[in-house]
Amino acid sequence: MNTTVANDNLLGAYLRDRRERLDPSALGYPAGRRRTPGLRREEVAQRANVSATWYTWLEQGRGGAPSDEVLDRIARALLLSEIERQHLFLLALGRPPEIRYQASEGVAPRLQRVLDALPCSPAMVKTATWDVLAWNRAAAVVLTDYGKLEPAERNVLRLMFCNPEVRAHQVDWESVARFVVAAFRLDAARAGAVRSVQALVDELSERSAEFAAMWQSQDVQQHGGGTKQLRHSTLGAIAMEYSAFAVDGCPDLSMVVYNPATPEDAQRIRRLIEAEGSDRSA
Image 1 (cartoon, rainbow, N blue to C red):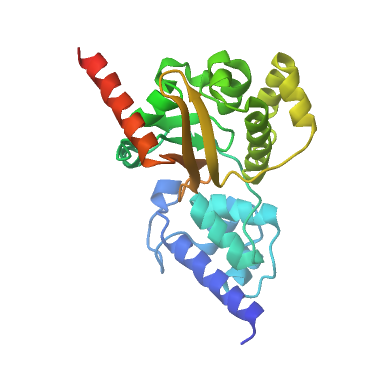
Image 2: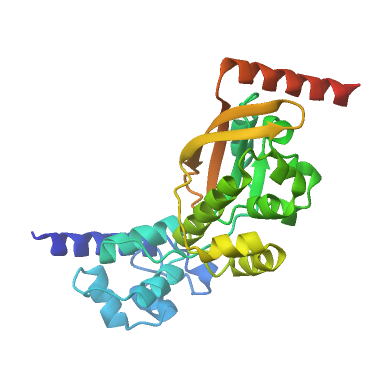
C-alpha cells in the first residue's frame, strides 16, 4: 500500500469516526432507527454543502484531495474542535491549516498556579500580540504591577513606548525597544495576527515616532531567551535570565520566566517581595 492510499484510508476512518459520534437529534435530525450511530453521510454532506456521492467517496478513501475551503466546511459540519480540525488537514493534505488567530481572554487556574509557584522568579503569560494576561507576585514587584493598570494598558509595547516609568527601568532602552518590536512582529506573524495588531501599530506609530521608525525597519527576532538588565527603583541594578515557553493547547499564549542571574540577585528580590508583603499586611 503506497503512502497516498494509506493516508486516504486514515482520512476516511477519521471522518467516519467523527460522524458516528454526532447526535442526530441534537442537530435537528429525526433519531428514528438508524443502521449506524451518528449522522448519515448525506446529512454531513448537506451540512458541509458538498456532494453526498463525493463525501461518500472521501470516507471510502477515494475522494481525492479536498480544498482548504471544503475541509473547513466539513470540519464545521462535524463540529470538530480546533485540534481535530488541524488533524483533519494533516490527514487530508499533509499539512496544518492556515493559522486563524483567536485571541485568548484569560488563563486557566492551573496555569496561574504555575506562575504563583515561582516565588522569587518574575513570570507572566502573554498573548501573541503581547498583552499580559497573568503574572505572579514577583513580576508585580520587580517588573510592573499589572494589576494597577487597565487591561488595555497591559500591553508590553504600550508600556515600553508610552510608560515613562517602564522606560526609565531599562538600562539600554533603545536596544530593548528594538528587540521588543522585532519579536512582537515575528510573534504576530506566526500567530496569524497581523491584521489584528494593525490598530495597535497605528496607535503607537502616532504616539511615538521612535516606534514608527523601529516598525518601519521590518526587523524580526526570536523571543526565546536571554538576559534582562533592569534599573529598579528600589533594588537598583538587577540582572535576570529569561526563557519563553509555549503554552500547550493555547497557540496564542507564551509564558516568560525571569530567573535572578545570581544568588545575590535572588536574595535581593526575595527580601523586596517579603518587605512588600509586610507593608500590605501592616
